[in-house]
Image (cartoon, rainbow over all chains, first blue to last red; front, side):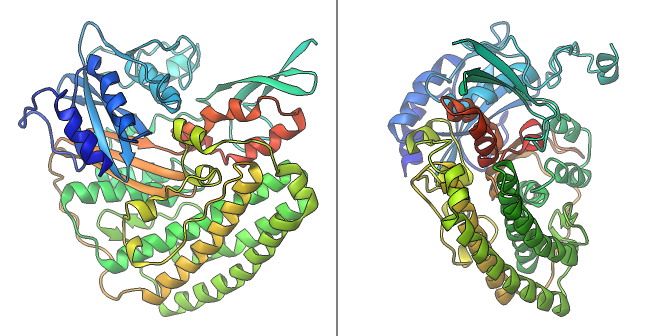
Length: 151
Length: 360
């Protein structure tokens, strides 16, 4: 119920949805821009939805999206496009401290700048990693693991 | 007072898997701890994009060395969701049966690790001796003690014979008595309680803010269990209790896990009794239609999510794995703060870290 209420409330923020470009998802989803993320989280928390399951980085064609999967008896996903050249989203760690490692993973794997979070230290990749962001598709990355290991 | 920083890990007797944390001490008390992951990062999500849907089952079995079956189950559920494939009831029951056996295995293993970390070697020996029964049962059913390789898209690969069911029933009866004994130790033993009560505390509000799931959350008053809340497979046909405690310390986590083990044994018995007849797997269609699917399940450590995106080709366009340990790790520095150095081992074990899961 709470998810349905929050979903309706967020529809007002939502970008217009283009049915053809986005594949269907089996749970409710809301399309937002990066600057609507924090207001959307506030709506969710007002409706007692606190549990962020994870953050997924996913490509639709050449466009990178971040998917924030929330859950309260049923799932609801916020889909945020990462626009170039800004390439950033605000951090959620002041509202949801549990988002910390998800955001650091996104920062490392997709080279998305998380505004307000210190990501200078590596968390998952080796300290001497020079292969770029491994999951990023629009910039050519040299994910030569052997080369990086034997330096 | 002067401060001292002690590095624990990546290789350390306290940890069964590589994780590094630097603990800053002031005298005997922990002031701060800094974590570093990535020592078993294998890039599984990236690898999955270059393999076919079937090959990926083998890959995801290797995300974790303890809860390997729940990973393939969740992945297969997601792909079946994309295909719109109905899995035969017998297949789902055999899947659930292994999931619950795995929960028993994981919780007993955990109890052993905790007992060893707090210096109670006898309890460690008891717990791991009893765990041997469930390992044998899993081997009997699937042929593998840890990696079962029994899941496939559309069902399972091996059926249960009448003889196996008999062995399973005998094993479960044995196990039920053994778990009762272990519960008596955890509930009453003075040394066990002295080492685990009142440390590693997390409140219900903290559990919610840090998005902690599974037994750790349920030991702090959380009530979420995906088997009850969003029943997947056929869990809605079975009766079981969600075990919760309010103490929020390491002892409460032990109690929750032991009670959950008994519940899992009860679940297994019900599944064997209700085991439907018929096919064990549906035929998989070759072409997975474009779409996205989120599959959720309750692993021994809490919520596991697989997000699978298909673009209509041979291999998935993206698979995201969410494992329960990652959020539990964030709370670790908080749980350790102010404790004595000697309690660090109990708290670290209490969370039930699975580093391979967290790193992927």
